[in-house]
Image (cartoon, rainbow, N blue to C red; front, side, top):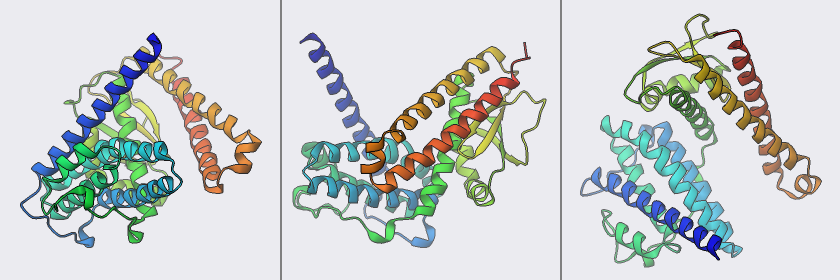
Amino acid sequence: PGMDLALSEERMAGYQAFANKIWNASRFVLMNLKSERPGIKDAELTLADRWIRSRLAAVTADLEASLAQYKFYEAADLIYHFIWHEFCDWHIEFAKVGLREGSTTTEAVLADGLDRILRLLHPFMPFITEEIWQHLPGAGKSIAVAPFPFPEPGWRDEAAEKAMALVQAVITETRTIRAGNRIAPKDKVRLIVKRAGREETAALEAQAASVKTLAGLENLEFAAALPEGEGLLKGVAGPFEIGIVPGQPADIGQERDRLRRDLAKAGAEVEKIERKLGNADFVAKAPAAVVAENRARLAQLQARREKLGQNLAGLADLP
């Protein structure tokens, strides 16, 4: 009973944090909206705008499929993770860049995204969604009688999702290295990226301004190889190898510890996916796309593990 109570309290705290996340995200969107929503001009859509619309169309389709099969927990889990980890953690952060540049299209995408998210979430959290929705420009009588969103067929954009995944990987790895080496968020650093494939590199170069802002960079450079002798803090981000030039000499022991942690994490993920793919029932019964996705993820993790091991080995002889 004591364990059940502790678990219940932990879940309630998690739900409260999620509700706060929705309130804060909604307040940000509403503060940046004018009295009427601007129109969306396709030619002015940023990568982040195209990405969130593509992800919203995919999540809407998946959520509808789950509800049609009465898998309510699965549907709730889909919208929960989309709101927290995609709309809040990523799209709003990218939108801040567009809003600073005065983009009315980014403003419109934010408003439309929040509107659809609230309607998707309404069956699971009716009171908070009704309250927030009533503050949106042009809101009707009640969200309860508003049309339920449908997946817009023209919004799916595989190219945008692939490009965004590259940008997210570089920003996330840069933040991880900074945190692992106690580099303060206010301290701007120089980031060097080793070029990968032509298309991948071009996609990242096109988003250089956003990467610099969200990763806290003084400068972002691309090179055929990472330079030696600059005390680089190295990492792996998708197909890219990256190196941060710290403002002061790195703590080698601290960097070894970070690389060991990252290596252990990558190794654990590799083993997990290998067990899954080694299960004949999973390979036979899972959708072909899911199996293919796991195999692609395994290849990425194996490459990451190898590069992290090389970076760690390179520190072996340093004091």
